Image 1 (tube, rainbow, N blue to C red):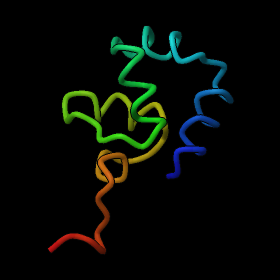
Image 2: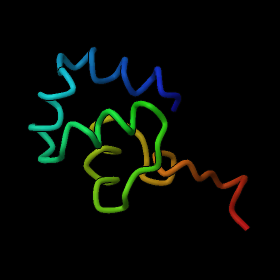
Image 3: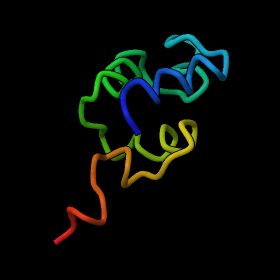
Image 4: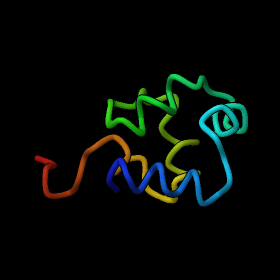
Length: 68
C-alpha cells in the first residue's frame, strides 16, 4: 500500500485522523506518521493493518521479495 492508499482508506471509511486514532486506541501522531510513511511500532501494527485492510508485514514495509 502507498501512503495515498492509507489516507484514502481512512477517508473512505469516514474517519478523520483524530477519529481513527480514538477508534483504534492509539495516538493521532501514530496515524499521521503511518500515513506519512514513517515506520510503525510493532505494538500498533496489527490494529492499523486490520483497519487499512493490509497485512502487518506490508504495513511494516517488508515484502516476501525483501526477506532473506
